Length: 197
Image 1 (cartoon, helix red, strand yellow):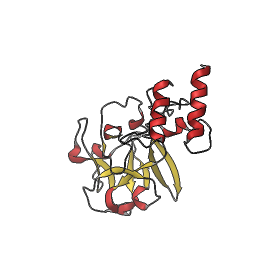
Image 2 (cartoon, helix red, strand yellow; image 1 turned 90 degrees about the vertical axis):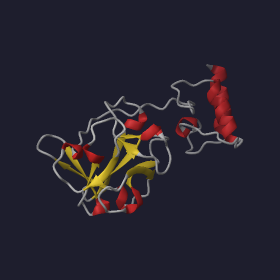
Image 3 (tube, rainbow, N blue to C red; image 1 turned 45 degrees about the horizontal axis):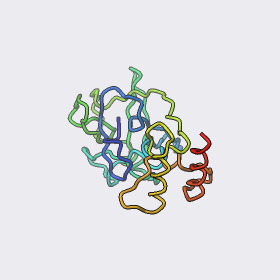
Image 4 (spheres, rainbow, N blue to C red; image 1 turned 90 degrees about the horizontal axis):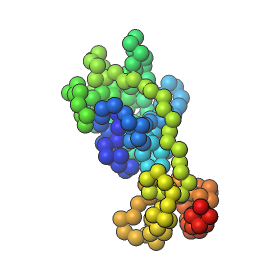
């Protein structure tokens, strides 16, 4: 299961893709919500903002799965039910557990859509969980290219100046001052780090 195009935005579609390559749009973090439910938090963007979401809180079969800013709603809570073969059903609380997350039309190709549907025993509703380490944040790497360089300092400066269509791929990497916000103090520290490297 992956976020289509690694888009860190409300309503970004969730789809099936071939073998996971360990990049952020393939990774999900389970957050215990109590009573047997979990939120599935996507690693896209800052790795904590977007959750798997049943669109519009709908209960109908065929309702699309996307990501949306985490809000703790029932449409972002899921119960994992073990199958005898080691796979899991992902039941949707939005449907009062009457539906599960599946691949639409039992598709087997990369790019096939993820939706909710009543359980039917088909393989398209069985999910395997693999433990992975989340990618490490590289301090200052706001463009998320795997290195800290002048390009990151320039990008952060443009972002702070509100240059149109300037986006930080990883704002947490820009929080060099470690105060849970990104501002001119971080820019100054990034410049100092770059000079000292």
